[in-house]
Length: 227
Image (tube, rainbow, N blue to C red):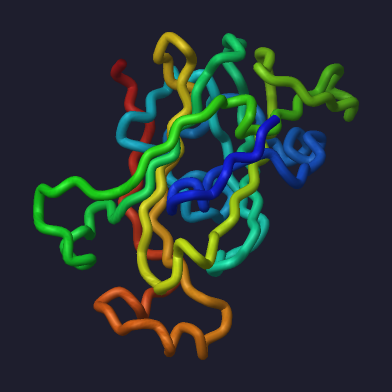
């Protein structure tokens, strides 16, 4: 597993393997198996499925949890994704992280239609810690690429203060695919990033989005049954 250098906003929130949770807690909570086609993902996080998410995605997500909420500038945080892998895949699967202003670019002073944001791509296995149960009785093991069955994917991120200096809204999308382009999963979120110290927030340049709150109301998408 490799830790990426944080050279731009997307890398600053890039995910790499970190704190673990017992897989047995996932199974005992009844979160294993195929996800519900509801619009909201259980777990209380601000994540939702992408418009491109399908019921045929290789990792059927049943819940997503954050180690803390809200996330502030200069915070380290952990993302726990619970679900079930429908099948295994090759080790050269990719993980793409995109960052931008989402549907609110005009609020950031970005002209309509102008592209804005950053995109990085890395190895799925370098960016994800996958835990699975070998016998269903609490004996867990780490493996990547994963095998078919229930799994807990844990990743870590860092909001670098040199890159996120001013409070505001940010849109992030995590899109994982196999080497041949089959989607593993896709999650998206729009979050307010601020300093925990309110004095630092007050010192920041005033903009239409400076006084944001966690989380911002989001547009959520159910699984699409079509391919």
